[in-house]
Amino acid sequence: MQIITFYVIPKWFVGFSIIMEILFGIVSAAVSAFGYKIYKISNEKNIKLFSIGFLCISISYLLRAIINLFIVSQISGEIRKFSLDNLQATALIGVYLYMALFIAGLITIFYANIRVNKKESYFLMLGLGLLSVFTYLSHIAAFHLTAVFILLFINYHYAKDYLKNKNHRTLLVFIAFILLLFSHIVTLTAQIQLQEYIISHFLELAAYFLILLSLIRAAKIKIFRKIP
Image (cartoon, rainbow, N blue to C red; front, side):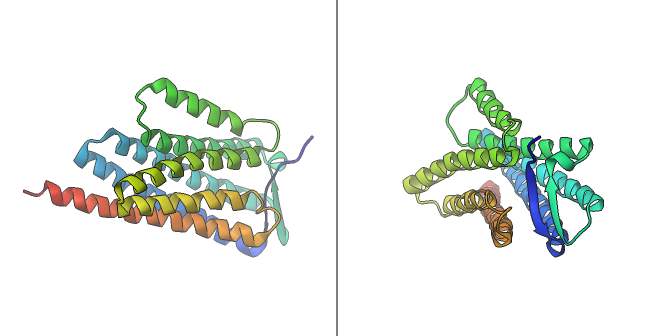
């Protein structure tokens, strides 16, 4: 049976990693909340989908933190190597849910940014994305490669939008998704180099804070325009 590595990280970083995952969940939840706030003001459907996408991502990170807490309670030693094949059934289901929710969140964000109104297009993208999570060969690699693929399209949209409108908030979001793209590229080799694993965490954190900052600014502008 093929063993699929989840993480290889030193003991000292385990607790910090879980704290970072919880922080990712909180910040992405704040992004979702501000997105929904803007949606209530503007009634724009794409903003609502953007908010739902980040809600999925938030739940996925919090679920991942819970899974890692469970794994840590089961494993001892200085270097903790988490393998999907060694997890109990409950943790294994949790890992798949984490990956499925994260991919679903990214696809929802991508769908929110394209001018396609047919629901079939969304479900096609969602189905293809989720299918990759459950492929036999290298589940984790397939997950990150799928995330990279979707993020490339998201970045293309924001780059094109920024070049067209020169909006600074769009630039912030574009930079944020560039950081997310690099974090997933880096994570593909994070099981080999600890430094890359740590860098990927900070890239993700910076990305979510930039998106949150952009939404806070957008919310202030929308509220200001609402005031007579």
